Amino acid sequence: MTDHAVAIECRDLGLVFPGAAGESTLALSGVSCCFLPGKVTAIIGPSGCGKSTLLQIVRGFLDPSRGHLNFVKLEGGVAAQRQVTKRPAMSTVWQAFNLFPWLTVLENVVFGLELAGVPKAEREARARKAIAAVDLPGFEKKYPRQLSGGMRQRVGIARALVMNPDVLLLDEPFGALDAQTRLVLQEQLARLVEQSGTTAILVTHSIEEAILLADTILVMSARPGRIVATIDVELPRPRNHATTHEPGFAKLFDQIYGLLRDEVMTAMTTEAGTA
Ligand SMILES: Nc1ncnc2c1ncn2[C@@H]1O[C@H](COP(=O)(O)OP(=O)(O)OP(=O)(O)O)[C@@H](O)[C@H]1O
Image (cartoon, rainbow, N blue to C red; front, top):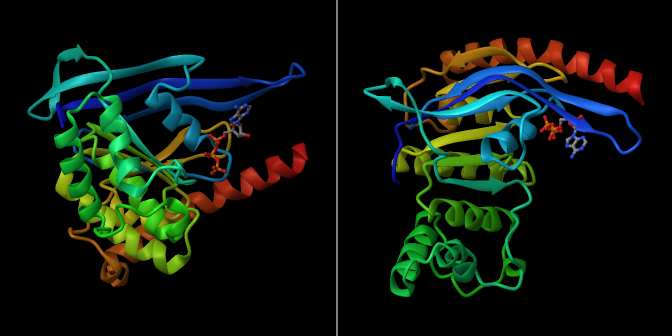
């Protein structure tokens, strides 16, 4: 990791998707939030509220229609005279894994390092270490089709972490997995992110996942998405399944569910109106 002390500031972001027949979709409106370095921030909100769109703006894949995205250097946790800096290095873990099916596990994990021009001996050593970190040693020569969904996503996580990114973007990383696999991987990811000290932004539909992984949870409104609440999670780490039995967990869960329920109802009404 090169520079963790960069905060990502979103100021009054808006995004309109133009439609083919002239109609347009206002996906985001007035989104202001901050992703702090070395912290995990979860984004949760009703389906279609613009969570992935916000992540794509942060990643640089989409330009906002209005507002600003700033990368601000911090010194001792505060903005260093508002010194704006360049985009930090980012890696993404996708819901759909997005592995190359024709490459082995090792080749998939090595791929980004190869593109980045890392010398052969170093990239193989780094890839093997990343594969071990996600508990997949011995699977280096397997192809994605020979792995379960959970194993494929562990390769996805290894492939992202091997780059030592300043910022790790997680777009519903466990959305395609069964409940048990999801639980195990949530714990594993929480541990890996904690150890790496990287800034992480997690898009999820799961309140439980948000609480287990995040330092801060941003709750979004129904579309057009904006931030309706910023909730700090102060439960002790390491967090795991046992955390879900703590009273503090239940309190947070209820608070977030209360906020989301209203927004989900609004989203459902809007969808019904546009169907
Ligand atoms: N490329 C696009 N062109 C037009 N509209 C789009 C495009 N991408 C997303 N949208 C629309 O923008 C809105 C926000 O989409 P987005 O995928 O960001 O929501 P989301 O909160 O991540 O949804 P989900 O939770 O269902 O994954 C939705 O109404 C979606 O249909």
